Length: 200
Image 1 (spheres, rainbow, N blue to C red):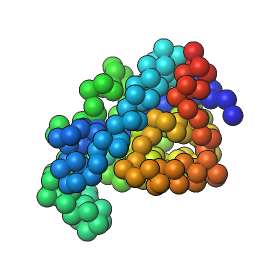
Image 2 (cartoon, one colour):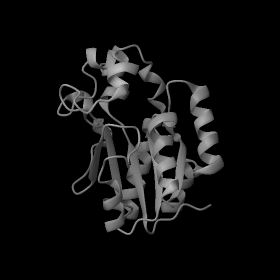
Image 3 (cartoon, rainbow, N blue to C red):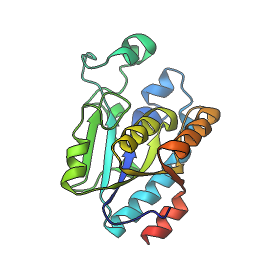
């Protein structure tokens, strides 16, 4: 399926220092941050193409309040090293979007404390107010926040396009399985080149 420009938004998911930088919290707790870096170039090209084409760019950040009052099971029980590393605390460098993808004036940033970009956020009202019907997804990680967002968007009948080479995961097998699942039931899989060409 061709990727439309009209009534479409680019959703850049969790491209934050904490995930992508060597000094970020995920690297400090032993996650191979370099496995996520390949998504960066594709995300940069997509943002540039979207801005030129007049496609709205929306960013998400995975952030927690100081003290992890909104943390839930992930930081408190499943990955307690996150609390020790003070990972993704709102207002810190760790939680900020990487400089090469810094949001422009007027571009919306959605903060969330769960994998889905919809759960407990203002994303859906933002999309509704702009009459958005199609979403182009890129970012990290493929099998958690990208896939969960794709599922939630698909269940809401958004037309979802996942840019496979602009997503990444710590483990290549999980990345490929997630893409297979999304492409089977929740989205169309596409590439950075295809989107840039469609929006050119």
